[in-house]
Length: 426
Ligand code: DGY
Image (cartoon, protein in one colour):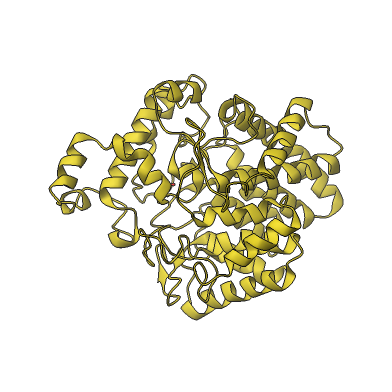
């Protein structure tokens, strides 16, 4: 599957549905590929940096013109060349994705001979440091330690309910009219992403068109955090994104130390603040997102909360409590946690982030459980994930937590990659 999705030095998450390069998807791909072709895995990571903005931002999509399939959120929607003073050298989206790159760099590097590793680390470190500095400078100007995301596609969990609430008021008048008339079929006919995957497995049409509107508003403020806040657009301190950042900071320190390079003092200070802030993430009960505008914790419990285990900084007693919840029947059937608890009003076993199990989320949880010393639970989740993919016979994007049926793209590269890693790494 990884070969079939090769786009020429990078991997498309899915040849039909996602025919370009995506940020965190490629990180998972590199983590899997390192077992079979470490140079190709390194190339996967380096290819991401071709799309890096001069500001340091790593975009969630690097567009690749050579690939013919039309993609619904294309460069025209993002308008980066016109919106940004210093655009990147290739077409990209205007938002980022969970910062898994340092994890991918460290994993790929660990699979290389020492001299080659040193060269790889030295090549990648300037861009990686610039990205982490951008995250802090742009997305945490108040130095709270927790960075904000400004679009659900940045969370990596694109159709997650907290964002439906956050953007509801942005629905364009035409979308509201159709929604109020209960006539969503009109919108279904206008969307492009439902050609590759059934609409009922994707985000609802009115919400998709609302996200296009949000993207337009972000473009209008040139993707600048200060301006989007002044314009009253949503910003959320996403618990999953910040969990990935905590771990990425740790991996960045390891990579820099191995390469004999010192990280900037300001960055080290910000990284410490994040770690300390994140340790309190269970203070409000289950780890949840925070509205960055009001400081209010959002009510929804989503699988993102369990990524606190992956961050790797929770005191053992808290990690144990969270692991207990993870395997509780409210969240886990046979194949690891659903993306929403089974009793959530929005739960839907086959719809994008509204219920399905995601192998790449399971990979993060297996890794987090293992590093928390919860080896038996890590093994159980690893085995269940492998079984899920084997039984379905294909590397689907997501699977029903009820019956293990595959949904979304059937040729999903990150699933293939984490499957490989789960098999090889043990
Ligand atoms: C999509 O096309 O729906 C993607 O999730 C955007 O990143």
